[in-house]
Length: 285
Image (cartoon, rainbow, N blue to C red; front, side):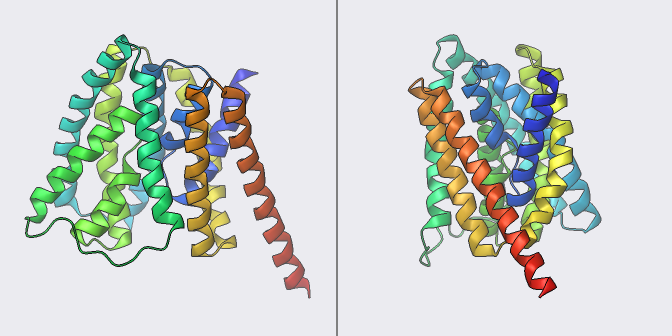
C-alpha cells in the first residue's frame, strides 16, 4: 500500500502548491529527508516532481500570454549554467557526507528570509541593484535560480518571482508566467544531470506527480476562502514549520518533525472547513 501513501502525500503537496502558488519541491525535499532517503535521491525525485507540476502552470500562462519570452531565454541559459555548477558541488558534498547538512542550512536561511518577509510588515526600501542593464540582471537571476534549484531540489520559482518583481519591475502575473516557463528548462537540466549520475526513484516521482495533479486544483479553489493577508500569514507559517522540521531532522528528531508538519496540515484543513461551513451558514441565512 506504499503507492497509495505516496499518491496521498502528493495530493497534500499539490493542495499546498495550488493554494500558495509554490512548487512542490520546497515541501517534498524536507519530507523525504525526514523519511531517510539519501540527499541525491531526494533532490532528483523532487526535481522530477517540480518538473511535472510546472508544466501545467506554464501552459496556462502561455495561453494567457503572461510569458516574457526574451527574458525566459536569458534566464534559461544562465539557469542551466547554474544547475551545472550546483550538481557536481552537491555530489562532492554527498561523498563527504556533508550534503544533508548543507541542504538543511540553505533551507533554514532561505525560508527564514522569506518567512520574515511574509510575517513582518515591510518598510519601503531602496533597490539594491541600480543602473545595471535588465538583461544583465536577468543573467544573475537565472544563475541564482539554477543553482538553488539543483542544490535544494526545488523549481526555483519561489526565488524567481520576487526577483522578477523587485529587480525587473515585472507585473505579478508576468513574473509568475515567466518564472514557470523558465523553471521548466532549469529543472529539466538539473533533473537530467542527477538522473545520469545518481539513482532517481522514477516510480516514487510518478506517484507523487499523480497526487499533485489531484490536489493542485483543490488548493487553487481553496484560495477563495481566504484573504490575501491570511494567505501571507499561512505561507509564512508554513515556511516556519518547514524550518522546524529541517532542524528536527538535523537533531535526529524525525518523528517530531513529521508530527509538526502533520499538525500544521490538520490545522490548515480544519480552518478551511470551518470557513466553508460559516460561508454556507451565511448563505442559508
